[in-house]
Image 1 (cartoon, rainbow, N blue to C red):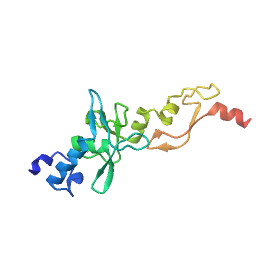
Image 2 (cartoon, rainbow, N blue to C red; image 1 turned 45 degrees about the horizontal axis):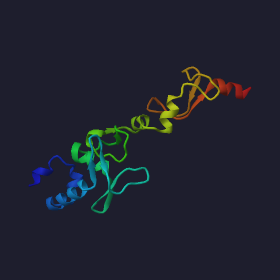
Image 3 (cartoon, rainbow, N blue to C red; image 1 turned 180 degrees about the vertical axis):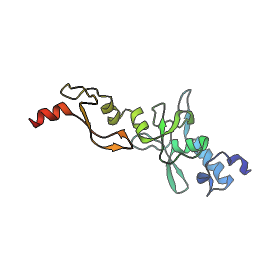
Length: 156
């Protein structure tokens, strides 16, 4: 009987008996509407439309539960990215564990929009010679970019 839980994350299964786990899965899947592409979470959602699900005394993200059931534990320091860009989707084929920066750069975020800018607000190109990058993280250029030409004009 316990063999059916071998592929599941042990941290999720641990406090529950097989009977209780079957009840949890039935309740979970009753809140999923499968379409041709996405599996839409129809239960409780937060303000950004991520599904939420009660597991024992803990409320967890529905997409993280789905990922963990299908693919195992989420690696340390990683988060789940929706490849379909639909926060309500719990289809494990649409979910991928990635680092925070990758997740930010794939979404429609301020981080991505600013990283894609090629010129400052005064029209100077962001080149390696003309850009001051504030903050560094493990060799990656992160943080605020400033135009050196604008800084020179401002300091005159």
